[in-house]
Each structure stands twice: as C-alpha cells, then as structure tokens.
Image 1: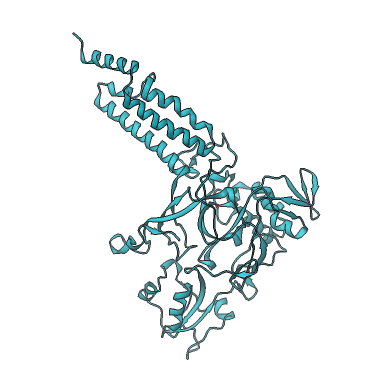
Image 2: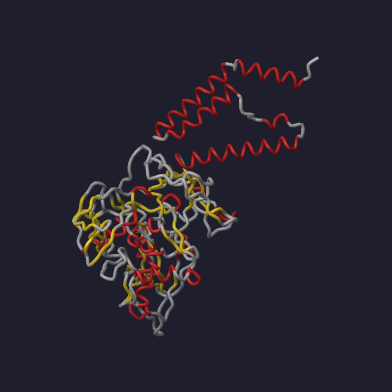
Amino acid sequence: MNTSTEKKGQEQRINRVKPPLSKWIRFSIWGTITILFAVWTSSAWWLLALPFFFDLYITRFLPWGFWKSFKNKTLRSIFDWIDAIVFALVAVYIINLYFFQNYQIPSSSLEKSLLVGDFLFVSKLSYGPRVPNTPISFPLAQHTLPILNIKSYLDKPHWDYKRVPGFGQVKRNDIVVFNFPAGDTLLVDTPNPDIYTTYYVFALENNISEEQARLYIHNHPEVFGKVIHRPVDRRENYVKRCVGLPGDTLQIINNQLYIDGQPIQDAPNVQYNYYVQTKGGYLSDRQFKIWNISKEDRELLPENSLYTTLLPFKKDANDRFNPIYLLPLTRSVLEQVRKSPFIDTVFIESDRLGDYNIAGPTYPLNRKNTWTRDNYGPLWIPKKGATISLTENNLIIYTRVIRNYEGQNLEVINGKAYIDGKKINTYTFKLDYYWMMGDNRHKSADSRAWGFVPEDHIVGKPVRVWLSLDKDRKLFQGKIRWNRLFKKAS
C-alpha cells in the first residue's frame, strides 16, 4: 500500500512528465515579461531568468520549495519567511531601480513648494530610468548599510551610463531628484560643505593653492577624516528645481533670473530672505503660523551685531533697536508682512554685509570669480554635441565638467588646455547639463554653489507626496499634514 509520501512523489513525477496547461500559461506570461523587459532595458542579462522560469513552471529539476516537505513546522515557517523576504527584496530592487523610489525632503531648500518632512514618490519613468553603475547592491540603501556602517554596494561589476527610454525629458521648472554632482569625492566625517568648497576655503585661509590644499587634506586623515570616492548612482540624492536647460545662457541680476537675456518669472512659492523689524514687540508663535514660517526659519537677530551696525534699522525712544528678524518670505506672504500693523521695516537680504560675503563662495571656485548668490553669470550651460572654443576664462568654468563628468584627462598649463598631453583649442561635450536651484533662494545650496548637474546624475521626478510630517508638532497636535497627502509634487 502506498504512503502519502509515495503518492506525492508519484504526482511530482507525473507533473514533470506532463505539466498542466496552467503552468505553461504562467511560464508564457513571465517569459514574455522578461523578454519585453530585456528589450526595454537593452540588456540581455535579464534573459538569464528564462531558464529559471522554465524550470520553476515546467521541468522542476531544481528543488523549488524543498523545505515544504520538512516535518519540523518551525523550520518550515522559517524558510517560508526567508522565501517571502527574498522575493520582496528582489521585487523592491527592480521597482526601486526602474520604476519608483521613495525620497524624503531633508532640508528647506524647496520651501514652500515641498516641505521638510514630505515623503515623495519619485518616478524613474518620467525621464527614463538609468541602468545602474553598480548593479550589485542592497535594496533601499543608497550607499551605506545602517548599523553595520559599511558600503551597501560592490564596486564591481561597474557599468557605464545608459538610460532606458522614458516618458519625456527634463523641462524648465521641473522639480528633479538627482545625485549630488560634487559628491564624487567626500570627507566621510564632514560631508558638508562639499570637498571642493573645503579645498577652496582651506586654500584661502592658509594662502596656498587649491592643489596644495587638496594634498594637505588628503595626507592628514587624522585631522580631516578619511577621503572616499563614490560612483554616480551611489552619491547622495538631492532635489531642486531645474531653471536652466542645456544650451541656455543663464544670468541672475539682483535676484532676477534671466535665460538668454529674457527675465524668467519665479515659481509661485519661491521665497527670499527679508529683514523684518517690528514696531515694538516680539512676533508670536501664532503669527508665525499664520505666515507659515517654521521654527527652523525664524531667526531673531542680536541687537548688537554687524546687522544693526551696517543696516538701516530704526531705534526706539530709548535708543534701542526694536526686534529684528531674518525671515524667508514668498511673494504673497511678503505682502501680508508689509501690510501688518505691527511691522515697521521690511527689506530684502543682500548677499553682502559691508565687506563681508555672507552668502559664501559661488561656482566656479576660483579667486578670479566675482559672481555672487544674487548677481551671477552670464553662464552658458553645456549641451551634448555642442563645441566651444577653450579660453583661459571659460576653462575656469568647464574644467571640472570636462575632467570629472566627461572623464577626460584634462590639464590646464599656463591657461592652455591639454587632454592626454595633447593641446586642444576646442571641446565637444558628450553629455547634457542642467542648472538646479532651490525655491528657498537665499537658503539653498544649489548650482550657484557647486555647478552643473550632468544628465547621468538625473534620478527622476517627484510626482506625489504620500506622507508629510511636521517636525514642529507632536503626533496628536497636527504632526501629520493631512492636506498634503497625495498632493502633486510641483
């Protein structure tokens, strides 16, 4: 008499000989999906999955689900969980690479368009997903595994840049998620400011060249920390608004953005810093909430400081300054502040305070550069296939582009350019480049600080806010911004 185990064995042998129609249908579906995916990504590697699908549904040579015959229920349960987790990780890996990615807004550079605490669905399909430079990586970890504090990816194999066809291209005023261009090299212990700004500032402070500063910093890890390098797809994710497209000539004059000589209207939620002096009292928390100014953005200036010494603020009858704030304001909120009965003086913050540059250095980081945060350019944005004549002046702007992003062995000697030791007078760009700026214009470290964003750094487009948490409020006191849930990210 056959036991139940023998019956199962007989059924498996029968299934191997003649799989049911349903198995053929499942294999056909997954096989078709795999072939279409391989065609879409232009990668034959995905076709390696076909033999596994064929065996899973048809031949059954591999012991799929071998643990299901275990007599120990606990062991079966453990393997069931492992099976589910592995399947989930593979699914998340593919979805994260080619379809959607989660992103959290960490800073106020895009206030009030996107708020600190917004969680976004980022569409990879909007501009076409990239084939990963580092395909072997742990899902959901950008570059470092938490707790273990080790790299979440393997350096090899390393694939060159390739973008899969998507629904469109980056347009002006799109909000874009991208890998931080200046994040190719960084100090592990002090990632901010970026390492190129660190070289520049250290060189200025010590009256040495940037190359001497670079060598000193690299040779003294006990002081500055370890220097590491990251591939493009493992650099930090940033989110800004694209204001300049390939081939544009961009300029900023007194905070007004110009493209090809024509003024460009700011997005509705763009804001600038303003000095706001009251007529006597301090502003209440309630008033700040009415104006939608977060605690992080409320700056009360000290009475005895360079601000009060160098700026035209008024004093009261006791020869003291009424409270002075530095606040980021949108156009609409600015009008409310100016009409407020308890506000005396309102004027925009300049990037200079007397002889002091309070806005910091701008790209390109060169001592000949006189551009500032509020008055910048004109600057031509490189376009793929465009050829420019190289001069001593524009080499200051494009050296990092040609060297770091285009991968050329460029040297500049006495104002002349050499690639692989051969003198060149012109250069043709291989990639398109973009200019990204934050809507919170005076509190955004953007392209004005670190330069162009190459096309191979573009990650995707935020499409929806799926969760929004207000860090200034407690859980049951309005922490969840319900009105922002599933709001379009724009």
